[in-house]
Image (cartoon, rainbow, N blue to C red; front, side):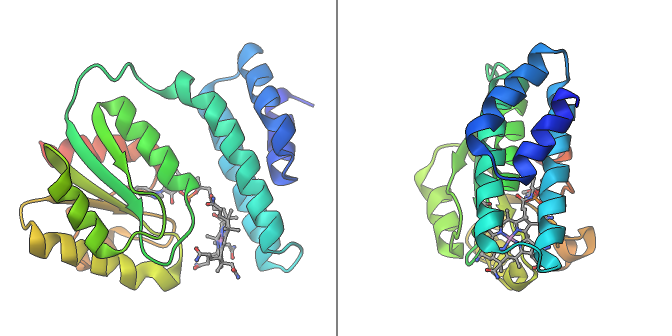
Length: 208
Ligand code: B1M
């Protein structure tokens, strides 16, 4: 089995103690960080499908998520830039009622490597907390909101609208599996990105 295939199985089966070493071995064997990341994201898709079909339950999803996070930690220094240039501060969080953080963490990593100073508010972030963070931090040029559940799409809308009503000129980017470009536009976001990689280019474009 290739090292990447091994990483994929370890994430799918939630072997968090073994994932970091396997990711490091894949890197040492010459596999690209992006390919390893793509394999882990695909694993989470498999985990989600198994959850949908009733084959596994929330605890197994959680264990797989922990395993993926261990793998991402190893990739982080490899994928991150030198962070020497600052494009300004970006506030990021997963919206209220939503506990999914892997996608958010990947976006944080990519925006950081693109040159943003990231303030990560974590998960389950109420709309007002985004606004407070804009107020409390220097040189905020962007707010990034992540939402993974169809049930938290209204919270995403509330976050965007609350930020925009407090700071009409503030650029807001949104994303997450159920979010579409059309929905992003409908709720008043300035930008949308389908994945962490494209979020960096979109964020830079937004702050112009
Ligand atoms: Co949950 N979960 N989950 N879950 N979970 C999903 C999302 C689900 C699709 C699974 C399924 O049913 N197939 C489903 C949502 C269905 C829906 O609403 N359409 C679901 C459900 C139903 C639930 C619960 C309700 C289950 C329950 O309790 N009955 C519950 C809700 C809890 C809550 O949030 N209140 C729940 C709980 C959990 C765990 C806590 C157990 C765990 C999360 C742990 C954690 O994050 N630390 C979990 C997990 C692991 C998943 C799956 C399996 C994996 C999520 C993930 O990390 N994917 C997921 C199934 C799936 O994704 N296929 C599922 C990998 C990650 C890299 O992708 O987050 O999509 P993603 O991020 C992508 C893009 O979306 C984008 O970039 C990333 C890729 O580069 N992106 C952005 C994300 N944010 C962005 C922001 C941007 C731009 C791009 O700009 C700002």
